[in-house]
Length: 463
Image (cartoon, rainbow, N blue to C red; front, side, top):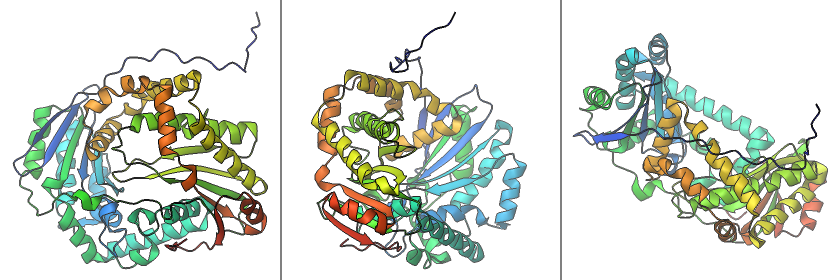
């Protein structure tokens, strides 16, 4: 028997399945090291994650990128071990060491079976406490960063991301990449990394997370054995680790970044957003899901489905301790660049003009609530979530009430968030592409001052 399917009718979301975020316990060792344990005994592995208050927002002046380079070089040597020996030891234990810095912190992690946890954690703690930063490996990592940066600036997507934040945050640390720009990276020598480590890595600036097949008592004892005698003068970054920036100037602008060989235009439209601590964060999250955060969002359906301008378009608020950017991102055919910008601006205006429909709200909240458990199926994902909650002062309870609070968001909440956090008068429109093709049409839109700029590394402060 055949059945007719009406593709114009959007399917209704199913019931949200029950889910309980793992319980946690925490303690602080006498030296100030905080230890958080989340037993997940059904999985025969343990993730250990160290969260260090050593983010790129706290990079010293003239040393942009030092937090990132320090993290990348932790495993290049310690004591009598060089980088190759360290990698071999971790490989022999069936795992690997990973460390990276974001704007607010540095995270190091390892996931291993319980029987090999002691040996893995012993080496893990040694790298955190006493990396040697061999000069040759610092130089190699520095060259890798320079190569990565050159590659980013050579392709339209990376160039658009770097130039957009450079113009939005002109003069502030957020206006330069986490890993630093070429000029600052070239200045990073071994002593700069050693000084950053001494200033930021220590028991009072570090939280250890143990997630997986381990008891609370066993985790605390393990931490005490290997890190209980750690001493350091490192102190929390405090306000020095938060970027305070507003968009300068407070006006609409259009910038065309010259990329004459680009087959299409990379578009970024946005302005300075909000800090993760904003009291309306959940309403903003739901609002953005409707605007551009989901495949079924207004911006994606408009640009992709209705106009066939692109394969995909999205928007997002980057959550940081300081006010991260709000940005709409897409790539479109060069000849429709101006029309795509028009549609993006139209959708932002519409989001502010009226509340979303009940159906839109339901789709967004049910999706966010429904996908929530999927995000935390692994020990590494749970450890990362707990680390993020710690950075932003949320606590594990935030996860246990998340779905109820998301589903309590109303159309009025979303409308208020749109009116307060989307500001057409401050929107920067940035396009990476061929000015000969897209310049005149974009200028004709009349979206503030329009200028063509070069694809150089350092944006000017008055651009």
